[in-house]
Length: 205
Image 1 (cartoon, one colour):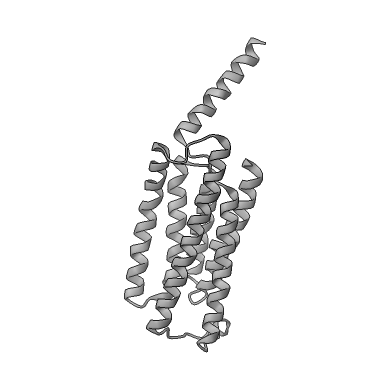
Image 2 (cartoon, rainbow, N blue to C red):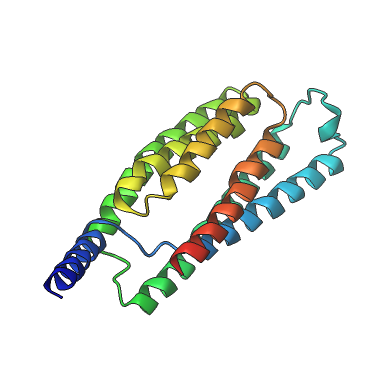
């Protein structure tokens, strides 16, 4: 009986330490919504290309005009905002349900650790835009996003790093298939997010 109580106490202590050092309220459903948003965005971009007379799957190299580039940037920002808002809503709901604070010292550390590679990647992508190196933007976003996830793993669910590894590998592979960034982008930010979100929702609900 004493041994059983001892193990229960250890488990309780370990759980309390994890709650204080890791942000464990990430919602798997937010990953699913982010993935669906990315896929819808990719499909919308495909039809934008069609509207502009660009046959994306023909494999031809196409020159994108300034107006089209601006439109694609706006679409990307909208997708990002929707993904962040859905992530916050689902995570806040889960935190409230578990009686946990959504904003504390651990959350701050998580956001800082996550933001550093992400901001660096954002500046890098702006430089690619500036130099009209559009074919490298999709690989760069996947790689830097993956690095951000792996970096943030210290302060949240360990499973996040596996999504990060997949994003990095996918981004590196896409460097050998330049011109197919939209497809790799849809896989990385869409399909992988949905799969990850469903697994996390089932595992931690």
